[in-house]
Length: 367
Image (cartoon, rainbow, N blue to C red; front, top):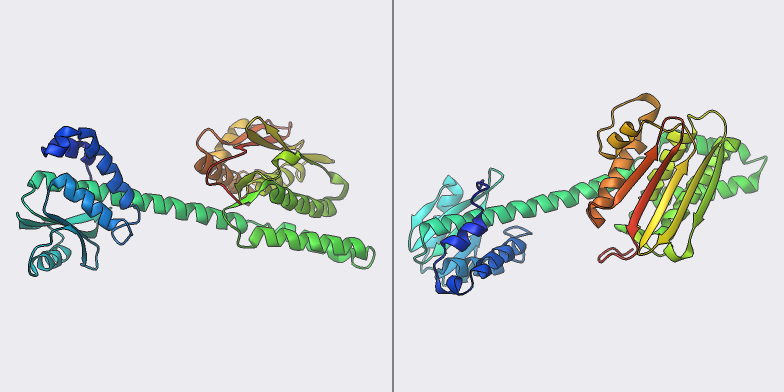
């Protein structure tokens, strides 16, 4: 059920309602509309349905308001109609998906994204036009809740995708190197196997949504130790992190994809030895982490496309970690706001530097 842009339900309710409470404080009608949206965030089966029904009843100045999901069992606020008239109307609406009844008892279908989601029941002499606007407001609130739930599911799916982006080529090479050292350098082989186990555990284990800079740097160090064993003298590494940022909380699997990108798409295609530098430090109230390589670099326009998720296949630059960069950037902006995220500085033949800036303290972000 769509609502024209020039006729938002909350605004229409504030304009249309002529009850004494509205005249005393018209802004309160808009505030109540906002509360209805919050109460219906979890849908018509959520815990806020009764509170939403109370708010709708006050907006309509009705004797009673009921909200029913597809089960057909309404949650009421105020006076319920006598007998089984309400149940009959609910069944009619769920069957025909059209409005049923007339004052003093009306039932309206609630369509969300062209699908029937439930029924609005109004008991009393409320104006039909206003009841219609109330139904539109409820539909918009339910649709918003679905979109928020979809966004959360998408974020979780992206995190699962990052966990699955361990390169089979890297795993094969790491295990091959470890196997080659078992007899000649057993102590080193043992240390590398422990690093490999740590890397796999951190990448694949079920973690919370957030971790700490210390844990991310530990995962980076184990990954780089394995890559140094694979690439030998071709890879040099510098990792420096200031103690004051070790406890900073950040989304899980943010830094590891950046380091993997530096090695796989910066150093591996590069002729001769390469350097990967990872730094973490405090700048005022922010934590700034940079991952820099002196490898092959890339066209700045390509880097922009990668961060925007528009990267096209282009041989060596393509790969799972490319997707990981857009994933990380999107997750950072979702958690901290559009002014945060990744910044990439690069040019062909000049290496790449990716900078992460996050607040050192952010409400709700805890490991």
